[in-house]
Amino acid sequence: MIYDPGRRTLVLVRFCRHTHSLSLDYNRPQPRSHYVMDGKLRSWYRMNRKLIRDVVDIYQREFLALRERLHSAEQENLRRSKELNLVLEEIKKAIAEKQALRDINRTWSSLSVSIVMGVPSVKREVHSYLTDTLSSLMSELSAAEKDDCVIVVLIAEADQQYAGSVADNLKLLFPAEIQSGLLEVVSPSVHFYPDFSRLRESFGDPKERVRWRTKQNLDYCFLMMYAQTKGTYYVQLEDDIVARPNFFTTMKNFALQQPSEEWMILEFSQLGFIGKMFKSSDLSLIVEFMLMFYKDKPIDWLLDHIMWVKVCNPEKDAKHCDRQKANLRIRFKPSLFQHVGTHSSLAGKIQKLKDKDFGKQTLHKGHANPLAEVTTSLKTYQHFTLEKAYLGEDFFWAFTPVAGDFIRIRFFTPVRIERFFFRSGNIEHPGDKLFNTSVEVLPFDNIQAEKEALTDGREKTPKYHRTEDGFIRIGTFQNGVAEGEVDPTFGPLEAMRLSVVTDCPVWVILSEVRAHTSSRINTVFVMIPQPSGPDARQPPSRSSAAHRGGKAPPPGRTPPPPG
Image 1 (spheres, rainbow, N blue to C red):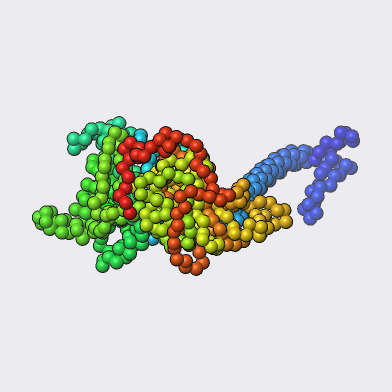
Image 2 (image 1 turned 135 degrees about the horizontal axis):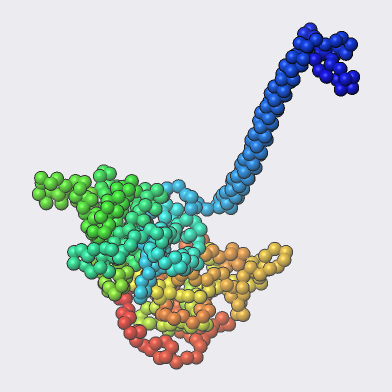
């Protein structure tokens, strides 16, 4: 029953249960009970309208939540898409790098090699021997040996600026070795070292020496941890040594020929911690032991304690213990490494330690070179002549070179040279090297050489620099060594020459000369005292005593024995 304001009367509302619809009856008088029905209907309508609103609110909230989830999923998809794009770019980059390095036998990500050599280096107040040490090690390695080893240099300084400068210098001096993976340069974080100011003095050593040996122990630990996954064996070296020829193969064969795997240390030098070989599988044990007692004792004492713990019986006497330790520590003779440093890494300490088992050092290396005459503008010191160096009998030693000085090799008959190799300096005087010196050749047929070799392609761009007297520059000395191949388009050569471009601050030693030909050629030598011909240059006018240093060697220099 509802009230119709238009008709001003009550209208009966009928509900049909069959059609579920309402109908209005305006004509029939409405009984009083219908007013009660009208109130119930309004109450039912209000209740259902509230229910509908609640249902709408629920669906609306679910819709908003769904939209939020879709938005989050979209953002996640975008993030994953970016990550996948980055991964894809990294894969493309890796493929490109692998393609670019396909001709390199071994790279930074190379598989395990036979021997890893660790060389810790610190800042020295007087003189650094690092580059000479690396030159000595790498010069005694064959191509196959270089593919089977890694030399890791640890710049053991918290001063990042100094470490960076040393690394940059090594990259400049040994670019090919670093690129191939033969040489790696690492440096610890500034947070690697603890506070050394709280160390206690022990064994009567002053605090500075305790600090020095403590840091040294940590340097060894760092190198061992870095190297343990890179090779089968690890050899500890120092940055002030020289190596004996064929040292790598000798060490490898000695390790492989051991009758059992019970050994712990193979010693290739009797001095300090030089030339000590370990199995890489033992390095974790050694490092853990050293890190427990690195502040208490030096490294050689700690190694002895490790062996005592492994094999010595407290109920047996000292002789029995020594016999047991001898099975773990095996010595090789003669020594393969010699200590050459004079100024220790400990400030103010002078040490002239020499390994007596190293034997006589080879100061030169001879080769069967083609028939030639050699001349030089350099002033020879004593009996160390250029002709002996070319014949392989001795090394050539001369006073300080200046710009314009030369060493010339003129072949008796034109000869095809495939490769050349010149080494300056030697073990006793590693600093007497040629710097800023070029290698030049004089083709027998200059016209043909100019047509074929001096130009490159249709653009006729110069491949080589030609000097005024007709020589062609094909190489330079890098860290005291010049080596390379001779372009076959040059044809037979009439001569080769080493030309000093700038003044040199030191004397010079030429310890190895090799002009490799395709066929074996007997060697004969003729010396012409006064160079002649269009390519001959006279030494610049200068006071012999003032510039050459006189007839006597500089103060403090002791010339090596002949031969």
